[in-house]
Length: 425
Image 1: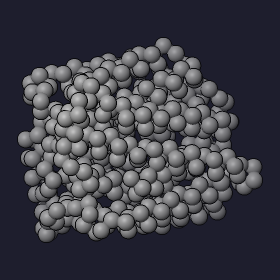
Image 2 (image 1 turned 90 degrees about the horizontal axis):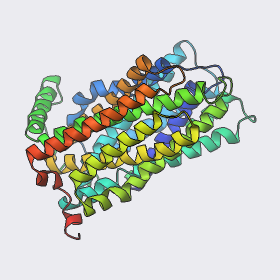
Image 3 (image 1 turned 120 degrees about the vertical axis):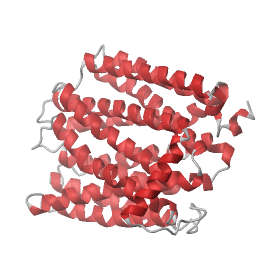
């Protein structure tokens, strides 16, 4: 948990620095296309290369993957901080800047896929639900802590240093947190997170493609896992649409465009509200599963997502959006916990590295697609009754799909990996 918290705290701080410089600097007035561009630059590369690097998670020490990932991110973040501190953000330096951001974000997703694949080495087989509610949820907690630290740093030095220097300082803080994650990695033995029997196959493109095809055939025999992966992607797309809508509202509706500091403060409050929902999902999801079932909990969270979307369709009030977003975060993260449990329980260990890379590819691709959909459909002010109504209908459709799949595949199939809860119920 310490490893995840430190690494994700660094990621949260990095995201604050990136958002502050690209989206909330005084000289920028971003629209939905600008936000979509940022999402594409930072998330799309791993979506494209993910299949070709995923077999490495079933060959390399996953502890070492985490260690060297954060060594690389430490170095890249220092470079980013120096570039922004000295204002070297035009011409060739802009290519270096966005290239470093691109690599840092891609490495982060690769590392998280490895940690997810290694989860089974830290818990028993019937504890997947409990582990999936606690371990991945400390990631959002780390992001909140890191983002809060970055915002405090940003505002504390506002007026003391230039905007570029304060943003550079935030990147420096992120580098320190990544170094802490590197230190935490040394608390694990090299083989502590698997794989159990590392593959010795070639890393040539043809052999990698063969390995991916094998993983794909394995997933086709696990329809419950495929259902979870697809619905996770849809719910992340819907959450991505909400995120873009709130950024646009903060920038163009709630404040004048020449007051980016106030817009960033509002976005921080929204992030804390949604993040609190993410953290609250850790105790909520296992409790609901204990009282009912994983299947019923998943459907209930999708219905909660629908209800919150319908509420937001009726208002542009900041307090209402913030409070409702807490319940959106609660619903989306609780559903993610259920999906994590499904994938952990239904995918064989030798394929988990590739399976969770596919998972992260869908995660990233959904956010990028959300930016594009937002650019095509949302108004400049972000908030749209029609868009939120469609989002609510999409959540309802996912719930209906889940119910129909459970009836076809068998309700008991969805409860695999929750034995530690059902024994005590």
